[in-house]
Length: 248
Image (cartoon, rainbow, N blue to C red; front, side, top):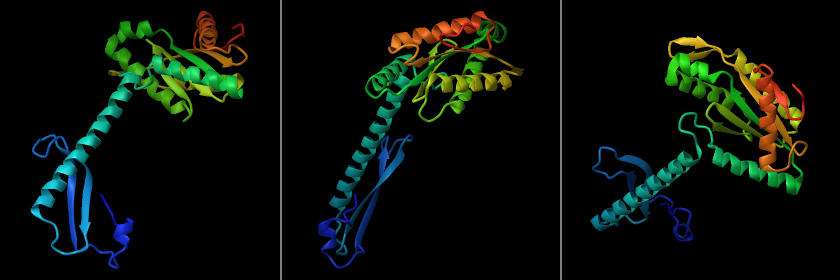
């Protein structure tokens, strides 16, 4: 707490406090081995020797309350993140992604802003699980998620859509531009060497792409269009990108 710039503080000619006390804002309890410093509480008086032991006790209590409040805010943010992110890949969960998709639909209806939606499926994932076990499969999913995160722009929304499926929402992006981005991602995945347990493996993905408004103008419709395009990509050999409405 700093009153240096308050009107009351500026009414005095001196700007250097004669008495100063600072207390660490501690979360977790001062006597706890898990205690941590989350901030600093500072008090000033222009007259020397004006702080009493009661002032010190009061400021210690205030500092502890501030530390507890900061810790509660941190925990709240953490629980909020847990509620919308997948524990394995650290990507958004599908229910949060669906909310964002609805927001993009509403943005289009109001402002005519196009967007592209992609479903990405890891090819032959069952073979990876059968050969390397679920631990190996999890490592592949985590590394693939990291690669996708690196490919996405700041405004893009990534999620784990289910199992080995991922979804990518590209706001303000026409479908042809989204198709180019999806193809670039597919190529980068195919070129990447994945470190799984003690082995090095290569994987591929199939991608279905759909755009709003040309392929659908509802959340259900855009998902169905991209899902059908993904089916065509997998039917015709996998490791490819198909735009909705195109015969692969």
